[in-house]
Image 1 (cartoon, rainbow, N blue to C red):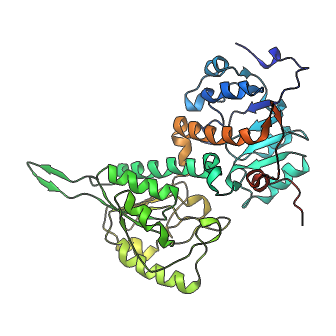
Image 2: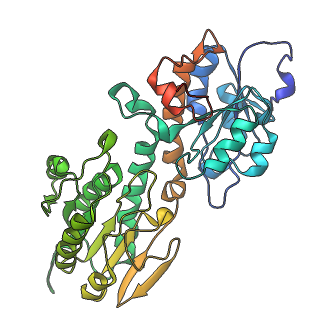
Amino acid sequence: METAQNVDPGDSRTRIGVVRETGRGERRVALVPKLIPSLVERGVHVIVESGAGLGASLPDSTYTKAGAVIGDPWTADVVLKVAPPSDAEISRMLSGQTLIGFLAPRSDDNKVDALRSAGVQAFAVESIPRISRAQVMDALSSQANVAGYKAVLLAASESTRFFPMLTTAAGTVKPATVLVLGVGVAGLQALATAKRLGGRATGYDVRPEVADQVRSVGAQWLDLGIDAVGEGGYARELTDEEKATQQQALEDAITGFDVVITTALVPGRPAPRLVTAAAVEGMKPGSVIVDLAGETGGNCELTEPGQTVVKHDVTITSPLNLPATMPEHASELYSKNIAALLELMLVDGKLAPDFGDPVLADSCVTRERKA
């Protein structure tokens, strides 16, 4: 097996390191083997930590066959990660290195400050602007697709009812009714998946312009008369009056559904509370709520992040880091995002980010900003 010791120490080409994720339950890898040949052709070395791809069913041999070497990625010029680095990982980084990955800059200032103090040039993939040419680099969206799909499978598994309509000799079973709250990428994928499983899907969002997207996947639109489009196309936080109106309308609507999947997030803020305890109490026994916003507090008042609980005969589950439960395809999608971002940074095999490019300027969270 080829190791990093086979790389000429005098070679000045950029070295890209792929680390083995150490976070609990994290099985994704930042770069899959199939994307390595194109990087090598660009004139870079790829160093992969032993075992980095095992969680995604990618043994070391698949990396060496693709042109990478097995070694210490923390010595590389560019370090690629999925999850935010731990304090121990930050302590391994050297001044002048570049880090690319999810960094949670809106919610963890201490981590960003630690990276800046260490002299690390850090790019947060969640800070990539939502512009057309950056869609291929949009890691938030690629991973949200995975989460939305898996949320429906979890709901179907927890439900006491079939999703599709069934006609049998013993009679006809009605299809499950599914309400998705929050129609971003995860919500839209959840609606499409629920439809493919045969459920009757309905979507709701505070941004009324997404109604056509909901209908495009064959779902119905729940209109509560609220418009809360915020900066960058994301939802803004509602006013107190809007919250009260929405809460009452949702309490009335939720009781008619077998499954409720919540995906609503506001960047840099706690998740909005959409499903009250009263709404849960009004749902049919055996109903299911899948809350994808647990990491920021949850959309359901009775959610216990990372747990599955039963309240008022309703199952409420709030899985954390769902993309990591589908590591093979989640890693493949994430790797394509990372490779596209690297394309912007590499010039003749050398790392040369142009901070006149808004994609790089916005995503570099440790660079000093001009007033």
